[in-house]
Image (tube, rainbow, N blue to C red; front, side):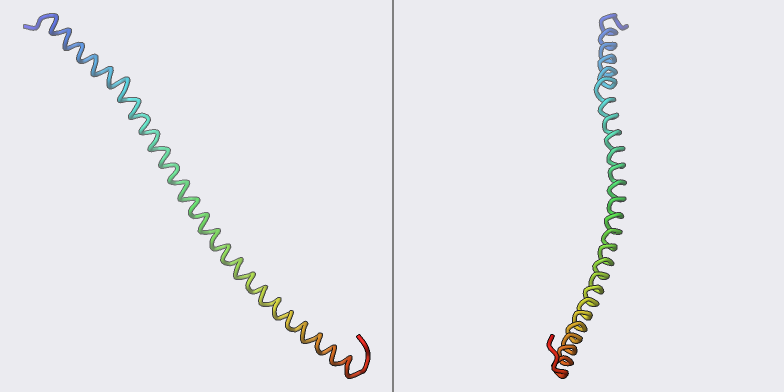
Length: 99
C-alpha cells in the first residue's frame, strides 16, 4: 500500500515535470516555430528579390546593347562629318575662297 509520503513524492515529480514542460520547453518550441516561420518568409522574399535582380540584369544587358548601337551610329556620323568637312575644304580650295 502507498503511504502519503510516497504519494507526495510522485505528485512532486509529476508537478516538476509538468512545470518544466510548461515553463521551459513550451516557450522554446514556440520560439522555434516563430523563427522557422520568419525564415520561410525571408526565403520567399529572397526568391522574389532574386527574380527582380534577374529581370534587372536582362534590362541592363538590353540597355548596354542599345547604347552600343547608339555609339556605332555616332561613330558613323562622326566619320561622315569628317568626310563632309574634307569635301567642303576641297571645294573651297578649288574655288580659291578662304574659310
